[in-house]
Every structure is written in structure tokens, then in C-alpha cells.
Image (cartoon, rainbow over all chains, first blue to last red; front, side, top):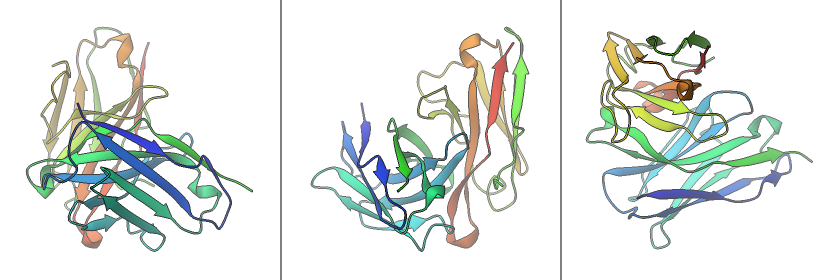
Length: 123
Length: 111
């Protein structure tokens, strides 16, 4: 059974960089079929996709966050990471990592999720 | 403002059938499959329906999905108290080089 677990600081100061890591267990990240995503949920709000990375290094980012986001992968550790620069209070959210899978780009879904980690941006 | 449009709330009594709709456009639901996620209070979202109408292993057949044009729907039959949750639709959007979009979520209350 695949499991994902987010880790990182729960408090980040405004203008600094938010850094989170997702550890994947129960399966390899190196399959071509999987894409590794970050999704966030602001308090009391809906879900917002941040971006994904493939083990090959291919990345896609939410156009609204693209200028501040970087997602990287370390397949040797079965981990992938999120960096979000120049954070403000509006970046306070629960951050989820999730696996995306499916036969074609038009028919994929997020089939496994981490439990989420609350990150608060405050001085 | 979410790219996919959902009603913010829905309700039903035990045993009823409730339908939740998700309205999109030609660049998302119109050309790619819609997925549905259930988020119970205080927990991470869980995949409920993928590729418009497929259920992952373990999801009861009370949950069903459909698509018509640029809209998708989730139907829950034989409503149970444990179905009280937030439900989100999602689809890949081909615009702006491609990105995932979500609906704003529908909070389902079982009366």
C-alpha cells in the first residue's frame, strides 16, 4: 500500500521560503506512470493545485504560482520536495502531497494523498 | 473563483439520492476526464470517482459519476450519515500549457 507523508516547518516568516518534503513508501517513484503533486487548501477554502514532478524531472506548475514555485525529486530517497518563495499570509494552508496516475494525460487522477501539513505564514 | 463551478452546499435525508454538479468548459471537462474527491471533516481528500464514472476499489457502488458535454455529475444513492463531507470535482485543463483545476467544493449535509 502506497503511503505519502509530508514533513517540514509548520511556521514560516513572511517573505521567506516555504520548504516541504513528501516521503513515499510502499512503492517506487521511478515508474513512468506516476506524477508527484503538491496541492494546498487554505483554511476553510477549496483545493488548489500547486504543481507536479515526474521522476524524469519534468515539472508542471500552476500558472498563478509558477514564478514562486520549485518542485524537485530525489528518487534515491523516494522523496520529492516543494519550495515556495516570498511567502505571505495568503500562503497559509494545509499542504498535501499526492500521487497522480492514469493511462493518459487526459484520464489521470490523484489516487493517493498524504495526510497534509499545516503551514502558517506569520512573523 | 474556481475554474470548475459547484454549488456550495447540498443536502438530503438518509436513503435519498443526491446529485452534485460540476460545470466546466471545453478546455477541461469537455476534453479531459473529471474526477471526484470526498473530504471527510479533518481528513485528506480521497479519490471517489475517476475518468468520469470509474470507482476505485473499496468505493461503494452507491457513488456514481457521469459526464455530459462540459459538465460532470456525482450521484450518491441510499444516502448515509457517513456521506456527510465536502465533495470536489477536478479535471486537467489544456489552457495555459496545461494545469489541474478544481471545483470550489460542495458541502453535503445529511439531514
